[in-house]
Amino acid sequence: MLADCHIHMVLDGVYWKDAIARHKDGVCEPFVRSTLARYQALGTGYLRDGGDRWGVCELAAKLAPEYGIRYVTPAFPICRAGHYGAFIGRTFRTFSDYRVLVGEVKARGGHFVKLMISGIMDFDHYGAITDEPMQLELMADCISLAHDEGLSVMVHANGDAAVTAALSAGVDSVEHGAYLSDETICQLAECGCVWVPTLVTIANLVGDGRYPDTVLRPLLECQCRAVKLAAKKGAYLAPGSDAGAYRVLHGQGMLDEYALFDGLFGADAKQILTRGTKRIMQKF
Image (cartoon, rainbow, N blue to C red; front, side, top):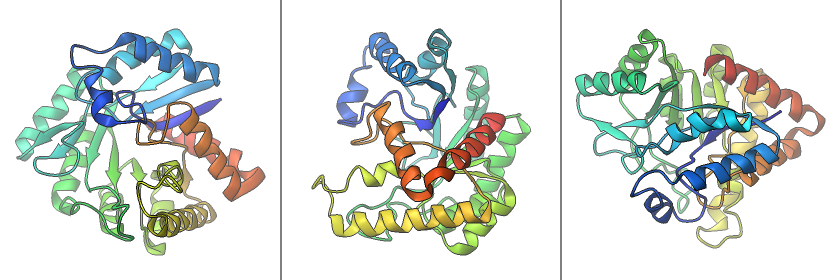
């Protein structure tokens, strides 16, 4: 069984504004169905959506059983007002606001909480992240509240500071996780959190010309090195493509992610990814 543990049904891998506009008058069901059919044809049994604020992922979760797919979603991502994530998620200013949003996730049948705690990789500047990480105390409170409500937590996190703070706060899965130190990778392995490194979001940009390869190639090398160390340390690694991101097409992005792991681990890749996928499916 194939799985993609991080997708965005609302996006299409081409241009995010046009993709979102497709659903401006209501969720475009034909698009959702055709995308689910594509995954079905590839033998996909599990999809985990990162969420959106237009209800696209919620319709996908409702329709997915018709295609033999288990589909889980947070309903919508949650982020701090004025910070990365507002283009696709819901924002909060106070912890009381956050509590209300978590309540809405539960009321709408969300399967978990998606929390945005950092920016994204700056593809023009190696080592840079586009936004500061969420403060540790707030992050811990947010994760604790979700757990108290019986919900696992997926965090969008880049940069060593954001990831180590999330691990310390007891997060269930880390998405992306660029620029991790060896110490944080050891912490990841010890705590049992699942890492979804989304290698394809970097690899598929190489040679495109949108961003300098002089940044992309060392970034991909850094991420691959970290993934190899994480596997060596016994961390849980799961396949996730971030399908819908630029140049990451639904279905093909999943295959590309598996191929990247095959390149890193050869015959051991299947065992590594199966182990991580099972862990994700238990938690989410």
